[in-house]
Image (cartoon, rainbow over all chains, first blue to last red; front, side, top):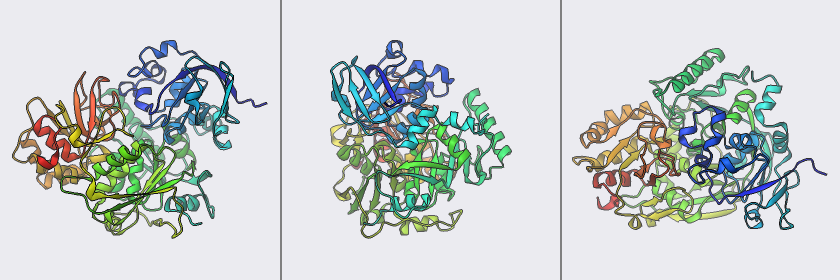
Length: 166
Length: 409
């Protein structure tokens, strides 16, 4: 039994979801606690008022394309339990992992879910169950080194424990 | 089976004989570049000599927040005795500066808290952007991890036609091949011989918009000449083995490429030959950023606007990539030519490219830009439209007031 399972309601997004949609230009220099309220304001206004802690993001290809803006921090602060995408932009994936957000590249995920379905994501094995439809797709679980970062809650928490950060 | 040039750097820096796609490698980082906001809470660092610190996103500080960020950065520089620090006055956009200063070197691994770090791939450096928390990790620990991606080899043949630029080539690739998420590009071919460092740096920079892990150009005569007298350290270029493995080979005849414009909101799968977008009225034209803020970009723009005027109802802003570019463009007379045509030339900064300052777009405005990105809301209002073209396309369009083919301008 993996302890890396999360279950939650699915929000579906398309391909090429970029960093500037997650953290708009005007929000870059706001304090971290004020950034999440602006997430997806350009492409999906009102979403931050509907999303609930424990919900899961499912997206198409090239998720997180764009800048170094720490999209993972925003998703973690909104209580997102996992991000599963057909493919991730490399920097987008790094920023999710380094924020401690369970993340999973998974081919076929977009067709396997309708918005509002309940997903059970096992980010240790890569298995994603659609509990609403009773179907399963299997993604590419991240290497152990990266799973360890997620499990620790992100790199800054790791560095604090080791005395590198005040 | 041999290794390609990217795999060979990853193998060397991770202390392994061989690496292959799918491997996770932990590597020593040679150079870490950080900008604007010093991470003050760092108590101990790996090695001050691996750091390059500078101010680029908002320079000079337009807000109190930015000013206080700069104060933090200077305290960090003093505390840890960082030698490679570029204060305001010697500043530039990080990717432009590390090339100019000979700090991005062949065969090295360079990271930076900005996504366009792959720019330094033009110098045969394995370079990529990192997020802020990971930069903190690297500054503390001096190492990071990479998942080795499959590599596409791009072979350039022939020569660009008059009025067509390296910027058009990378737009063409984005339009024809889409994104390369999780993958690498290596660039070769006789067509590269006539593409100088400025053009290579443009293509390497925009590789970020193709979602590449790394984009690597060869160590050839063009690069060797550029580094001669400039490189700050010894370096070891990386060449592919004769039997190197590539996922695919894409051969492009440069002579067949036309000016290419990227339509608003995304870059992958979103380019059109210019004749499909001619006539779109533009409120703002912009040339700048790590992609196109170099001397050759100023030269192209100055030649196009010389003796003409920016169209009524259109504003044209140019931002040099560094103080050094500004100095050279001034000496060459480009700045005066641009000013006479009614172009606004700003100080070097990331500025308008990311909607930071000096050139934001208002509601419903249309921009043609040679900067890095066209995402919704990127340069200001979310209802603005951002088209991307070569510096020639941008300059010619600024004179016309609408998007035009620079070959007919």
